[in-house]
Image 1 (cartoon, one colour):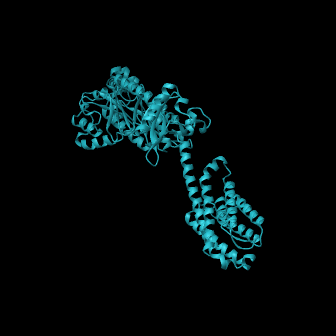
Image 2: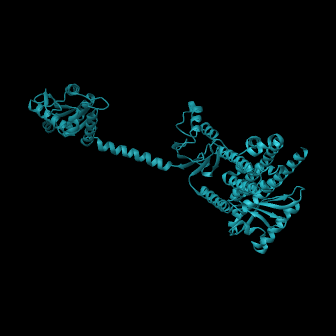
Image 3: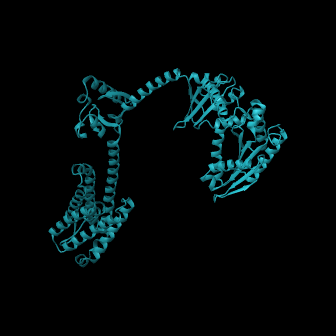
Length: 628
């Protein structure tokens, strides 16, 4: 039995050796025969199985016991359908060619074990095999062989299971586990190598490795593009003398030799190659004994960065000149509120707090200095702490401010927030503009008053009344509110002028205006001189009853003035009043009708003897109600 075990151990050594040779050659073979790795693995497994059959233990005439099943099972498990089919075909064909009483049983066992490996491959298609799965699979192979020795006809008759079942199953199990571990380790190494190669080839930098004589051993894709080669193989064995002018090549060579001689890395060295600015780092490579055997280089293209830095320097210089020459003050605050830049004009714009406006100062300190020196007007100094808090917290907002200083000067402060959170502040002296604006506003108000005011009486004139009438009619129509109009005419006023003269007539008109203003005293009421001795009173949101109350009050106040009028049948100045009132749809459709109806009511009041009030109420149905 010891001899049988020794033969199986020798067979195990052969199978393991075959798998190990494959592991060492697999990377080279896959590169030379790219895309055919499954076929190569199947061929290797088939050859290893044939070699194992040649080293088989002869159990009886035509009956061979060996470790052919380990490579076949692994071909199915790791190689998939193509590798399994190829290895099984080679092993089965060779076993059939050998012949013997157990040839058919041998072929069946080959197909069964290979099929089991292929089944495991299909089940684990989306998962990578692990060492545990290999161990379990090896045990399963041993179990399958035990079953086969018990059920296959020739082996069953020869009592192979009883005689050689244990060494046969155990050694095939061991061979499967050992060889599976080798394949698994090779796959992991290949994966790591591919990851390194991918990272190496796809790096945005220029990567290369050189030998002791500064000749390229390997380069990445960026290197061949830089030097205009088609493949990385073309650069292997070349040196800088093959790529650059003599002077530059000597400089690079001596620099690299110095790195390898001293063992001190060269980091971030600036090189000018092929018209580009490159930042190179070179580190020595050592073997296990610590001897320098070459160097690895990483070179980064900084051409764009260099150009950008140059442009930035130029822009900074230009900005400094611009900041110094501009009339406005300019400042920048970071996201935390600290002043990071300002020109002299910014400090000069605030004479009392300029000393606090220095780079590094926080906005809260600047605002507090402004408050303490009372530099700005219109600051609530009774609650200054609250004002400081608000002013500080609103720094990082887009805003426009106009502030007045203690000496009367004005400053425009425009704050704009950049995308990075920086607050940019532009301060302009707008004192002259503000003074002109105030003067212009005062002039405009005076002109407006002149344009809208009757020069004699000081009340609203006809032009302003017309605008107010259309505005209020539209507003009351929208709100379905009443609008009333009083139209007043002084009785026998021409005779008054003829008798007492125009100065007395003017004084009479002024007294009438005063009585009207004292009668219509709501904020929205409008009293206007309509022309000559005719006046109007516009009463928004007042119906005919409210309008009649205003008219009666005016008549009473005018009577109390007791302006003597010898040519009047009443002995003093009186007035006739026509009132019209409307609302709703009629105001929206025919606002001018309110004027015509008030005028008609006034005319009717005069026709009925003067010194009276007559009211007309306009309804949407276009009927008019007259009251007097």
